[in-house]
Image 1 (cartoon, rainbow, N blue to C red):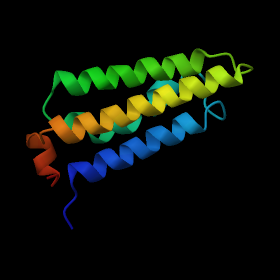
Image 2: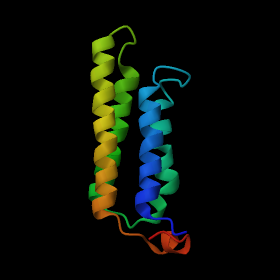
Image 3: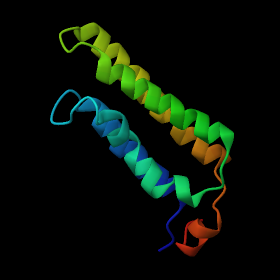
Length: 113
């Protein structure tokens, strides 16, 4: 079975959304940005050609996750807004990879298409 870039980014985005939805929880606020972006960095970033549009959306995800992590936990409305902002940023990153992502040589060796 052929694994597509779309499959990988879909799985990475799902994992990132799960981290956003489960915060605050078992993950420390200092670890949230890296936990959110971890699947993207591990499964996508090294397998596509560098594109500034994708990198900008990745940065947006990191910034949004820091904002969520730094929002006081007793401010429920602010937490909800920061979480929505992060999920939107994850969605935009997923769309950017689907639109602009070109599988590189390393990704092709892994069988991505």
